[in-house]
Length: 431
Image (cartoon, rainbow, N blue to C red):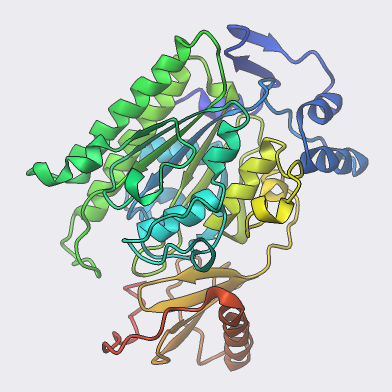
């Protein structure tokens, strides 16, 4: 939507509670301190002390949140991540006025464990969902539960049969619409071009209902799009990646239009994020839009496990629980890089079907879990990981291999190695 591209520079906010647009009445610095809670108050004070101008966040008690996840949408498929062959004008326009994390990864390669990580802020070895048949235990509070406890309306619309309410994925959502997923088996055409618009219409209608909500509560909407995937690697003639990008782009555009139609653009946090890295353990998109944030590209390697603490900090919910360790998750809040500040994120774990990776600083190291091959990439110069430098830089390979081994020894290990023969070292074209 065209208005998104200019909203970030304005210090005024559209919000449902007053039914219009009114300028900020307090100085930006004082307004931020008043509106932010928890750690963000300290961050705002630090910004002011450093002579920086922190962004002015929405006047609503909490921003609205739209989280969009698309199964199979790798970062490499998008123009805003360097793929000049794909056309996704709505996603590209969103990226232009958002904070784009260039090196985001998921610690799971399947949608069920990846989604569990996204909503609990914990790695699969902690939340226990290791495969597509895993059940999400209610021992770990989800992000939806945390927000619902603060009076935020919560809704999920998802089209993936493995993310069933029966498997625990509806925790914290007042509305959990999985009708599209439950009818997949009855449809002759289960392609993204068919399923994505069906799910989008449900989500857009729910957004429209918020305008008729007399209470005007803040709300959270999670849209998850999935369609059957062919075996990887994709054949050169396989049109599915193009179909997924096209369908996802239309879905993102329709959802943003729905937010704009109820005059909620200025109060809505939009996150487009990949739930899992797929069989390749590929980069996932992570695009964060809040009108008060300055658009920028962030090269810092981050993880999908970081979404949970990031949203909590934006809501000011990071320090209010008696047992912070039990509720804070295992990721790192990305509020600092969202504001253009440095963050010592530490190593990031990524997984493919048969290999594990560690991404740290400017490097990505990966090895096949049975030890058949290893690869090294300089992600800042080669974000798509096409040039293997393992032979040229053995010291970096050894250093990062030890780092990955340390992560796995700390509880991030694979299940026992498979007896099945592992695939050969993928070519750079597969990467």
